Amino acid sequence: MEYIMIGLFIVGVFEVLAFNSKKSKEEYDERQLAVRGRGYAYAYFTVMILSPLHIFTKDTLSLPVSNDLISVIILFLYQVLC
Image 1 (cartoon, rainbow, N blue to C red):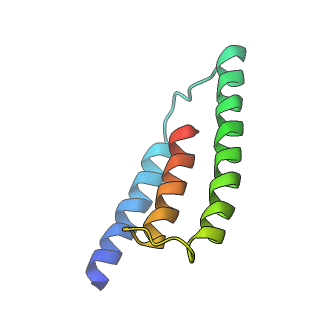
Image 2: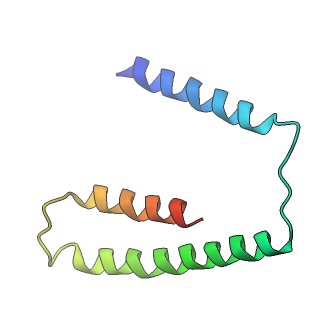
Image 3: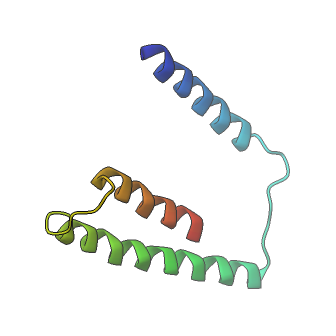
């Protein structure tokens, strides 16, 4: 188990270093920045609505999936919308 965690850590560090060393950074024009900002706003409000909804309903509803999976799905939606 420790070897898996060490391997994932090394892969994560490698990815951070590989993506930060790009020489040509992408630059966006005004329209692309506006669309990107709107996406951030949608993602923010989606997480702000789904997180409290999940917290208040996780004890009253019996869902066939675990509460941890629902939290991961909320974070995944945030990442997709951004």
